Image 1: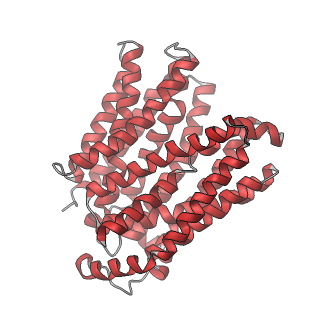
Image 2: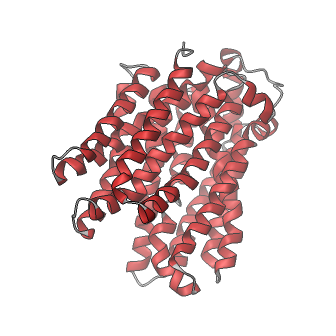
Length: 388
């Protein structure tokens, strides 16, 4: 039963990653069809991000009322409907409208599943859960690429993913009895009151260490997403490599995260969450230094890969340690604001560096990363001592 439910959760997290990179792969075809500037992809991305922030902040209330299984099933159904809406959209305005349920569904399922695994499963399972998200981000663009290179349109790519999500949503609704049995079996062990009251945002912010962990998540996603978005441009504009080489190297960062999380699952059998997080932060620091030191392009490329590998354990291990730091009865509320902070960071901070690169210099890329990495290390240190 335990392993069956974990498999269901893994598949749900693959589905969470499936559409995340599809917009980027399809947009070069989409924006011309809609007659909008190429920069308008940022508008859709921002609408999705804002939806995820709102639903993440409501995750504690929703999970208390409906249960983690029902929230997951409904959220996946919302994203499935939104992706189907994308597939039949004939205007940019329609895409913006469908981006609203897409974001609301993604934020709820992310927070609910992360808390459920943090409470009921090991750090190894949490690392592999986020590895599954990486698998989804790899599969999604490949589905879109298959559609575009085989005489189909971008609409068909979105339609294929929406069908996958619809099937998964149906499976999640059918699995609800399994969720309820697991939650009942674990209730006494975790100590979460069955009728626990949902916490308000003011109450969450008042929890000692909550603001520090939110800031740590904000800084983490700033480092991760800025590296993912601007790593190639930095290599081209600062190191002088070709755009084709940079595009190939950029994928190594994502592979570093996905592969790193797979390896981290095994390492958690030997090291605890605190050690994994600090090890990841040290790797990020090393990777940033390799971008700066005059060791040539190969060292700089290795730096990007090492930053990706360093990012791998940080996010899942902080989430997994949240019940130990803040208590099982508060973990859903805290994880909700952690997710919201992460989405705010990923939404606003990479574009901010874009402005810096445009108006000052792209050479400040490593400086930008190291500032937020140091702040993340400092904020995590404020709560790390509470891990039991």
